[in-house]
Amino acid sequence: MSSVNLLAREVAAKIVFYGPGLSGKTTTLRKIYETVRPAHRGEMMSIATEGDRTLFFDFLPVKVERVNDCSVRLALYTVPGQVFYNATRKLVLQGADGVVFVADSQPEALDSNRESLQNLEENLLEQGIRLDRFPLVMQWNKRDIDKALPVEQLRATLNTRGAPEFETSATSGRGVLDALKAITRLVIKDLRAKRIVPAPRATPTPVAPGAGLEAQLSQHLPVRQSQTMPTVQPPAMTPRQSPASSSMPAAPAPAPAAAAMPPSRMELTPTGTSVPRTVGQRVLGPATALAPGELFDHARAAEASFASGQYGACVTACMDAVRRALALAGEGTLAQQGFLLRVDGSDLLRLQGLSNRVDTVRVDDAAFALYFVMQVFTRLNAAGLPETA
Image 1: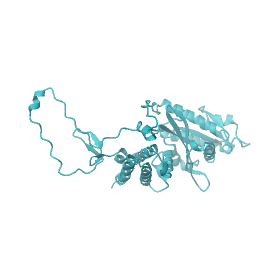
Image 2 (image 1 turned 45 degrees about the vertical axis):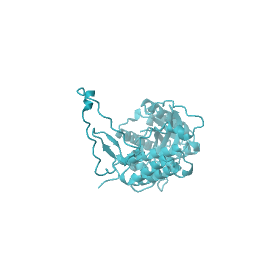
Image 3 (image 1 turned 180 degrees about the vertical axis):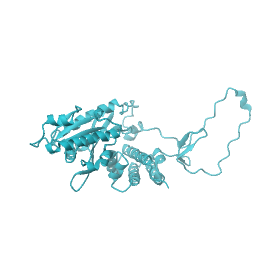
């Protein structure tokens, strides 16, 4: 399922390249990576077996056109082709917004193509999705081979749904980008139909000429909460009360608490409503409110750095918090841990890049880092981590 970053005005959509083993899925992603301009692509990650087949997934974030006033970022994945890796296929397919089925045009691969397509349909049904109502593009790969099956035969066997189809040669790149453009159009059309993309934001108040980026960004950030707790308004007078009743003695002021209350995540008012966690009289930010106990200090340090304008220190603290948070998912690389928690891979790559150049980060970079930390904390909470005794 696509995700929306309201702060960055960015919609992230997930496209999965599906197909039998050695059909050309990984080669297709590599060719896309080589073709896309460096400014519009992220780092390509691949985990392979000794036989040079995709074992886990390939991931490549690509930035494409805008929808309303939001940019669209595609996260491209491939699944392992081997049947005995079906559990991993299901994991990678979760949350997909569209699929490119990469079919092998060789005659001996026809049964494998049919089996893989049936497997795709079954795995989507487990998520409550029907393939005939899902953005799908058929990629007839290896068309440069002399013994390639006729397209008519592939269509009759594999494309009874009438999905857009493209003849490709992943090794040379022929037709690969055409298939990517087609699935992108289908996914964006589906996002618009589902109203996933937020409405364009209102025109902001003009900024004085010469104002810096901080002043421009402040228009789009929520107003900071007061540093003290809001005062409680007196209740409205009941019909039996009258101004004359004001002559009655006032109720005595409540006695001060015998001891200061320890910090807590949320506190209840007499009416049962909750207020943000506080330490002393300071209202903590949302990242700290979401943080597990062992990451509380890291989140607090990140928010304090942001508030004081130390954006590089904020990014560093956020990266440290993310590393410690993802480690709670188990052993493995940062990418593997993030995948297990279903963290947005393109956002993880972006934060890693910012942490390598903290001397040049800006206020919007630090704001993004805080947003991503909150995303990771939310994923931890959904997964029930860290486990409590």
